[in-house]
Length: 96
Image (cartoon, rainbow, N blue to C red):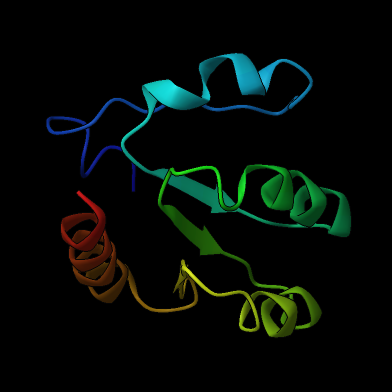
């Protein structure tokens, strides 16, 4: 999906969050794809820091945890690509 939006946004990929706090203020919004409980912990380190969060996961246990968190937009990545594109565009317009 980042290729769909590359003309409007620049994307950074982080796999290591040790030094992430140093660049947090540089982002308009953040899109997280959460695959594990450790990644959920990384997300919670950033939650409530003033940067809008769009979050996606295919893990149902993690999804049920995310649904309880306020102030995040839960992006459904199980939809077909055109639906995901529309939903992501809506979320981006909501937070920017």
